[in-house]
Amino acid sequence: MAAALAFVAPRAGLRAGGVTVDHGLQQGSAERATALAALMCKLGLDPALSIKVTPAKDNEAAARAVRYEGLDRTAQELHAKAILLGHTLDDQAETVLLGLARGSGSRSLAGMPARRGLYRRPLLALRRASTAAACAALGLEPWQDPHNHDFRFTRARVRHQLIPALEEALGPGVAEALARTASQLRADAECLDDLAFAESGQLRGDCSDPAGLDARHLNDLPRAIRTRVLRDAAIMAGCPDGALTAGHVERIEELVIAWRGQRWVDLPGGVRARRQHGKVWFTSRTSSSTSSTASTESTGRGS
Image 1 (cartoon, rainbow, N blue to C red):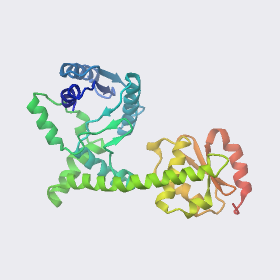
Image 2 (tube, rainbow, N blue to C red; image 1 turned 60 degrees about the horizontal axis):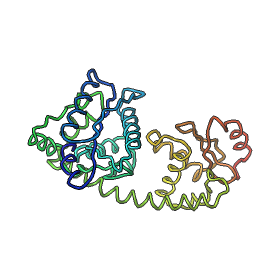
Image 3 (cartoon, helix red, strand yellow; image 1 turned 180 degrees about the vertical axis):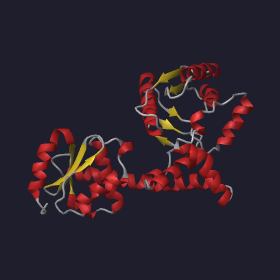
Image 4 (cartoon, rainbow, N blue to C red; image 1 turned 90 degrees about the vertical axis):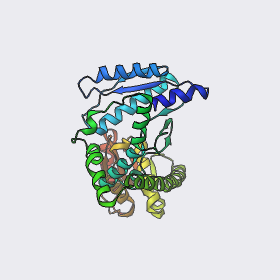
């Protein structure tokens, strides 16, 4: 992708740079990142940078989180208009299978979007083999990350064990079918997200406090819209997107559709959801634990 960008950008009148992220999780990663930055410079990308990040844990989720933080920060510093990522159709198929295995719902099954915010994935319709062939034709030797063959990581097992097993059992074309499914689901998911956004705006407009959502209105919504409204409200209150699971959202939803005077729901990021006076509220657990206990218990079953 770096080579393609270096070829296309100047012909389109665009300035293009490159950045590689060193997670510091492998021996020699700093030297490898420096060499890659030099290669990008040789290809004609300017600036060509290596940035260092430090994941909180040695796992995929932690590495992904700090990687995107680093890319966001670098893009802001350089006033970048877009960030191109090299994910392929094979990566998309793996993402769909991971979402399916985790029971993550349509949002995860919709896979990675071709564009979101500054991010673009121009290679999402290409197979990994095609990108490898392009590198060979250009005389480039792709770096094979050892983690991609480390079966401690779920994605490595999906890539080297699960997908080959599916192709052996079902025949070729599994990756293409999974990517096609993701594309179809994404169109549906984006439509539902837009409807949920409109409902969320109406709900907040009807409340004096923007953290409170009317439970009766929520109860009347289709479940696909209601759960999205609740999920977005939790994230707006401070829940980390990647840490908020479908199970968390289901427990919040019980405050709406199965209300029996139960206590609050503790969520990731120090956020607490509770029902009071006919509304669902999202507040900081640390700042409101005492008042939340008293007020929630005082409302009884009639709210």
